[in-house]
Each structure stands twice: as C-alpha cells, then as structure tokens.
Length: 250
Ligand code: IPE
Ligand code: IPE
Ligand code: MG
Image (cartoon, rainbow, N blue to C red; front, side, top):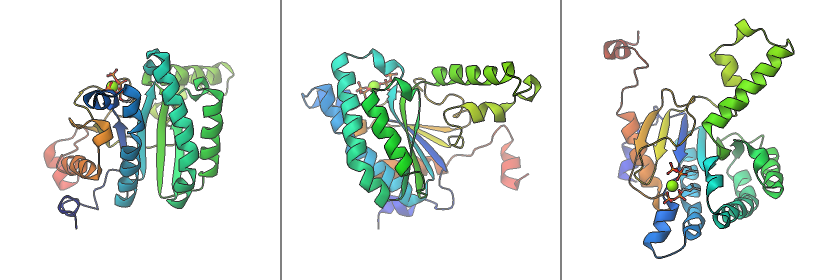
C-alpha cells in the first residue's frame, strides 16, 4: 500500500477541492516543444487527479481550465484549447459514466464556440444523475465576471419585484453564482510555483486552505494530491474562532 495514502485521515477528506492547473506551457518549453504540447499532456494529470479524488471520497472537484483572461492568448493557442476541450469531452463521456462522475461547468460558457457548448451540454445532461463525484470545469471563468453576472441577475429580480432588496444576503448571492450548486472550497491547489489566485473563485475561497506546489501541471500525479491533502489535514481551520474553541468544539 502507498505510504502516503496510509497517512491520510479518511475521516477528514476535503469535501471540495479546487485546482488551478498551471504550468503546461513551461512544461512543454522545458522539453523544447510548443505550448500546445503541454496542454495535450495535461489530460493524464486531470484524469489521475479526478480518479484519485473520487476514490478518496472527495465529493466536489473543480478544475480551472480556461479563464476569461485566457481569451487574450494567441488565437492559435485558444483554438487548440477549444478543440482539445471538444475531443476530450467526447472521448471521456463513457469513462465518466463508468466511473459515476457528474460533469458540471462554471463560467461564461455562452462565449465558448457553439460546437464546444453543444458537447458540454450533452455531457452535463447525460451525467446529471451520476453521484460519486461532481467534476466541474471552469471554462471562460473569471470570478469578477461571475460577480458582475450575479449582480445583474439579482438586480433584475429586484426590478421585477420578485425579490425584496432587504432579503439579499450571503445565501441569495451564493444561489446566483455559477457555483450555486457547489459548496464552499475547502482546499485550493495551484501548480507551477505561482502563488496567486488569478481571478478564480474569489467568493467561494473565502475560507479555503491554499496549497502551492512547484510541480508543473502535466507532471501532477496522485502522490502530489496525497501531499496536498496531508498538508491540508495538518492545518487548523479556525474560521475566526480561537484555537481553544476549536479544540473543545465550542
Ligand atoms: C495552464 O498552463 C493552462 C491554461 C491556462 C489554459 P499555462 O498555459 O498557463 O502554462 P504556463 O503558465 O504558461 O507555463
Ligand atoms: C490561470 O492560469 C488560469 C488557468 C489555469 C486556466 P494562468 O496561467 O492564465 O494565470 P496567470 O496569467 O499566470 O495569472
Ligand atoms: Mg500559466
């Protein structure tokens, strides 16, 4: 049995893990290849992370695949990422079914190419009754765009008198975010050594534990996920209380 796996407390598994999959371009460059080669080699890491998380009992895994800012990359790279998205979703659908994975998306998915929207909607629809894990892909996702969208939708309800302005609270806001069907993030992992959030889940990460690793995303394997979870399990999540209160369960 894996030694690292043995040191994981299965009663303290994070319910929701979010991952900023970063470093594909540098990984390819290190090998003297084009950036797109790195994106293609990211799939093994995604599969292994999802399988391992699922086996450990993680219920929600959210992967940052394409940000609102990533639209500003060279057209060649954006096109390659979009075709990779389409082929991967098509290819993986039977695997999602076999592994009982529910697929979800967050982001301004209307701005994706029509063909990508089509296959994404199909995969979401066909996996909607799966129950082992919810695997969300953040596609054309930006936290600020999400907040703008949320404010617009809430304002419309106020204007149409469907919602009383005094009723707006954290719950109402949660229910209008792209993540309305997801719980708060417990653990956020970012690869490639960058220590920033890059416009990912700002509201949802208010009390997440942040874990940064130097590993470039295409090299991320189950041992790296174990490391992140072990690190998470050694932290004390206080949510503003004192350590004494946490220890005595007050
Ligand atoms: C992450 O890898 C994947 C996407 C943002 C789509 P990058 O493409 O950002 O790789 P680096 O950071 O340039 O190495
Ligand atoms: C964040 O990575 C977005 C994704 C992983 C999809 P970036 O590589 O785009 O982030 P920055 O630009 O380095 O902050
Ligand atoms: Mg990057």
